Image 1 (cartoon, one colour):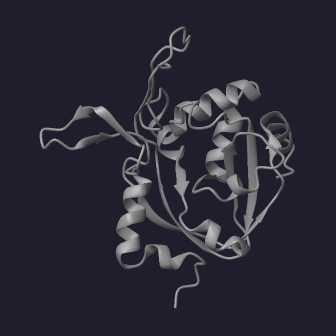
Image 2 (image 1 turned 90 degrees about the vertical axis):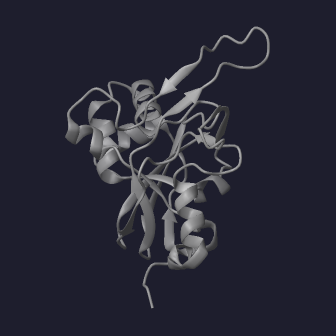
Length: 206
């Protein structure tokens, strides 16, 4: 029997469902304006080529979220980053605002998906399984209402950014299904604002 707390999410039909979810194939994640020759929806977001991986007990992972001290449910969302990815982002960040801007680009997260004003830090008490990889292309449309100021934007994800191939390939994200069912697998600290998280991370406290 597998040691990973969420191993059942990688068995049978659950594997296919979660693999598709890792690629961004979920209700609401389709761009209805684009169709392939086969008439299917053009999928945006998610991981380009998800690869199954195991996260060891004792590892620390991080999750950007909209900051709220009551955001307990958001702590068990499926999208996380490893310490290696966090280190690459933090090392290049000139400020907390620059960090959020880089994270949006590398992880391909439009602001209407998450404000990314806070960060959860979690330590694994039990091993977990995940799908890992770099983010895919996301098109962020301007607001539908009149007077919307935001212009359409392309968030290219980890493979399209300027930098070395090593930098691009390392900015990976993790899709970890089933966390809400195995909450005992994580020791999650209270959410911190991005500025407090970045300062603590750079001091080596996380």
